[in-house]
Image 1 (cartoon, each protein chain N blue to C red):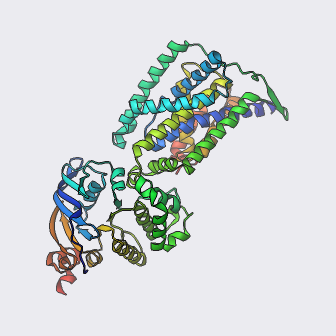
Image 2: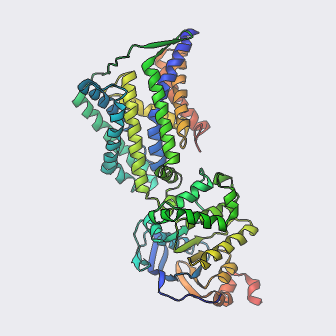
Length: 289
Length: 248
């Protein structure tokens, strides 16, 4: 019983990162109708950025977020102008198809770049407080992962505030709902696309930092994280960032529960089962409109 | 209606041809609206009325022809820029941001730089025109009645501070009592000096209110005249006002 509770707790802790990884993908897909399958590779880049900041410059891993996020924002702007600005010119029917091609190409290129720069080995970053563990009611909670969960939640909340309070945040939501109506109110929807993509990339970068701190990074984690994020987006539905965070927690717990019930290899299966079941039973997701 | 304003046209379409994909929707259409004028655009479903409005609003690029607003050629200019120039469209079916409140929808109407400067005054005008919206500011627009949603749609377009307002079927699917309120609001907006281009299935109401009208059939202008003149036109009466109207 205690072991199960411990496993579920670890599921919650990684679930927060699933939610954060999914938030960026959800934002980009919801606003641009573009599926960025290189999202996981952007997370991977965020992880390596953190690795460099910590090992080369001696930055505290969590404070590295303060540099990774603006860096990822800038990368997002560059990727938008370089690649995705051309995709959104197409009508909506061909957008997803074109974005898949560009996304896969980008994913392959970033993977090769990462192997070149950092080798195929798994990397993790040492934290001065790395081994600290809280014990609550017999459950051990790794301090670093708990802080990661809190930060993931804070980032989602900040995004939610941006989308509901900031002028351009509202423009992004309006564009997601009806881009033609958004144009008619005087919103430059291309600018809204750019901002959404840059914010999505920044969230991916932040997720990469937290993944590398709590777990590890290697050039090949991209596909796995794209998949997790996609499952959470389908599970939670579009349009609610807090809902996406909850979706991440649900996936984390479901994985832990199935690993406990059927053994470790089944951890990966449950996400795909959720994916299919949600698409059949409730295609708009748990919190989607 | 007396006192028709005569001036160089604020909006002038000349020889406009437009298509959806390979289907030609309008060809060689010329029409104009003067500053402060109210013009009705009539015609059966599929005649190309919405297509013309979409071209003027910048949502659809015409294949040929020119569209001038205040002398500037706006064919091919991005829609959000056209809004900022002062040409606004209330699209068919309202197209509100359904997940947002009345306040948020209206606020987004004043997104462009020029509109943003006058947003507070524009909001007061909208609430003076539609007092019921002032009581529903925090309500999600999805929970409003069809007529109230149309008020938000007109209000959102007014928030852009337009010099010319195009309305596409504003009375469609709305309770009759609220249709009157919408028409009264359109007249009030026009009296305040805003030009109106009105596409309307309620032909009698549209022609009674408008200074001039155009009849569009199969993508071409087949008639034009003063509101009263078109109301008395045998073809218009037969085609749009029903067989009984002809015998009157």
